[in-house]
Image 1: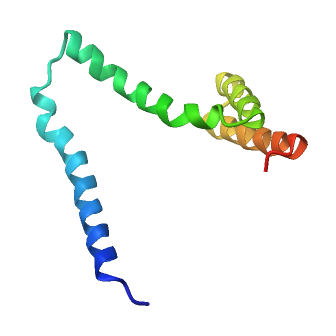
Image 2: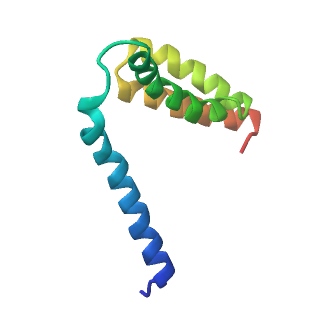
Length: 101
């Protein structure tokens, strides 16, 4: 197997960027405020990112929307693995009957 030098450099740069973003939290973390508006904004970032990642999938079709609703209901009653299984099964059934493959 041969690796193109440009691909190898791109992989190294992406790895360095990933490592830098992960380690930067440990470096700048102690300097972040423990209270106030900036802290509230920073606390909202994980939910905003999750919403930005999940929302396009939920809105991509009726099967995905139904599976999302089923997963939300299951997540309130089952452990995480059970909710994931319900979501996968729901999207498979929805795509089968709605023809959204």
